Image (cartoon, rainbow, N blue to C red; front, side, top):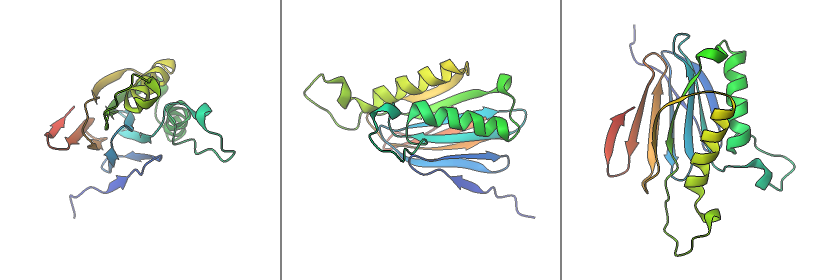
Length: 165
């Protein structure tokens, strides 16, 4: 019998739901924010790779709801509840939201990482889901893995090593 866990990869502007012993992973988090919402005792978790803060910025008719904080988190929560998670037991961990480039202007529109972090926090707060751990900001890219059986989020940051939150 194999003890290895399957890794479920979450792409950019994507979201996935899984149960232990599977592991959720997303890479390429620069200004994007990786959002993990989970019900620990049910061992079910969902991960979203949020690219932008607000779907109202889109001018497209065929909106990718997994791309924006305001729509992706709603979709993530609905999917978790549909698959057996309990609303009162949901908790969140987030990582990412780096400022990958420096600008000489104070224009807030260019601070996408910061805006993504604020939008994710606002949407989770709207749903009354506590953020129990976070590794956000800075100016380095990250890869994250979430383990639904332990509730551990492993964060690998470029040139800064790995930590568990």
